Amino acid sequence: MKIKRQTLKHSQNTGENPLKRVYVTLTLIYLSSFLFTNFVIYLFAVYLNSTVVKAIILVRDFSIFILLFLFLPRRISKFVPNLILAVLFFLGSVFLGFVMHPSFSSSALIYLRLYVFPWLFLLAGYFLGTSFDIKPQKWLLSIRIILVVYAFLSLIVYVFRRFLLSCYNFEAFADITLKSYYDSYYCLLKNAVSYDFYKLITSGVTRLFGLVLDPPISGIILSFGAFFLFLKRRFAFLEIIIIVASVLTLSKGAFFIIVLFVFLALINMGLSQLRFYRTRQVFNVLVMLGLLGLLFVFMFMGNIGLTKSITNHMQGLSRGIQIMFSSPLGTGLGTQGNFSPESSVRESFVGALGAQVGILGFVSYIFLMYVVAKSYITQLKRKNYVYWGLSLFFFIYLLSAFFSESSISLSGGAIIFFTYGVIYATMIKRSFESRKANKSKMLLKKSHV
Image (cartoon, rainbow, N blue to C red; front, side, top):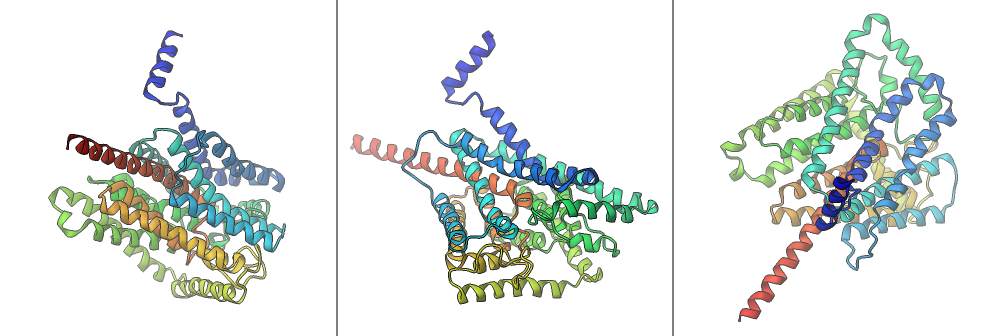
């Protein structure tokens, strides 16, 4: 009892909330659930009906409101960062689009959830970062561990299916079980899964679908490993494992994010900084680029139809923009996109957004990207290595949504959105403290004069 009182007294003296460790631990477990829930449901799909599956997923998703309540700052600050204003602007445009064309069809509710919930995770992460003294290095270390565990387990499942069970006709077993899984699951939460690998699983092309049971989404999750590889100055074996897993998903979105991030990050670092002590970091990058090169070659050799697929993604964006200008107020949620049966807009998150919500929704998304890009440039000038690196990754992640609808999802994006919210909060805190210190120095100099 005496020890507990001393601990509580110490936490009060340091200004640290005694529940911080509990909140952070539970939050990390909750974020991890978005990576593992699908696989658990898959294992028991034969024994679960659609109502149970929907209940499990919806309880998990709507729990974000509990985090928002727990982390909501008790004091209302006069200063609201540009990113938070941009998020509120985006959410307002989505709700306005919903009110202009009210619909409670399954497709409309799916897109309402898809457009709103990822940004709620960013807000929850921001509130966590402002309510508690979160150390960026410790938080990123926790996320890195989660990604490593996810990559290793996904690779184990991949090897187990690809090599060890081939003689037991595992593909036929998977085909039956997956059908049961989709029959009970696909009807509601379509942004969490796709039929992409379901069509390919018996065609001779083996893709790593990860524990979220979707190659494109799993590739997006694992592409986050590129940021952690970028941070390492020594040989990063675990980060290389994450990139290998991302390569095996054959995800074009992950390929786009990783290559563009590495290319721009190396340019920002500058050739003058690539000295001897960073040779291992450069080696990590070269190994990763080599793996991605093999991915590019394999996609052609696998006869997946890469050129046709890329064309479909580009057409989805252009078609969505055409509909947006022909219907500036949008056609309503659920009328376009992959999850609308009669849609002419496919494979583009931003294209579907513009077509459904209208010009205001499209502009609000561009404004979000502008705010993130501005933050990246500001931190680059200040040489804040972690902050500008993460802002660059998040900007490219948002950019990938122009050409892929699976880029932004809860299963694939919850951990990325939440992490950026946490780190952005610490970035704002650091900037505010720096300005306050500079003002104090200026006042001190004036007093001496």
